[in-house]
Image (cartoon, rainbow, N blue to C red; front, side, top):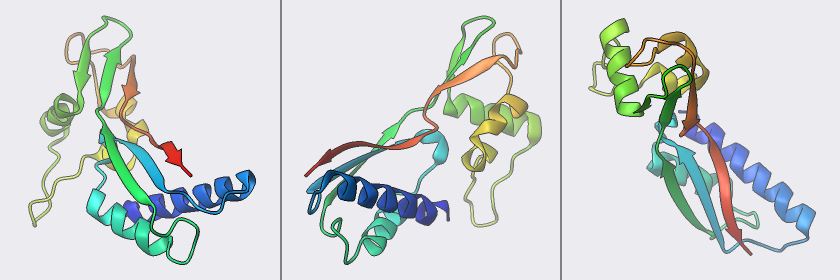
Length: 143
């Protein structure tokens, strides 16, 4: 579960921020996460709350916002979304669901594999960018 390690990194970054700014606590934290991370927000929220117990972050309102993935071909200009990328992976590599019915894209674990595994659905080029939807960042805080 990468949610716990991501939550741990966010908590420690925020604690460093609080310390560097001389703040006592934060009231609200907004985190934007990329769709490609396939983040389980319930697990992330639980991890964040557990890790932040006894810190200046305890009790802060946590808002989680998903940013949709967008791929753009540098050769022909085509754009496609994560659902299309996932269909390409299933078609070309036979990505299968786990026995319990949960399917996680290989891009979930290693977004940088996109350049290796995907081609533009229009022209077949591997020269494309993942324009949005792969990062996790603190997008807003209120002290």
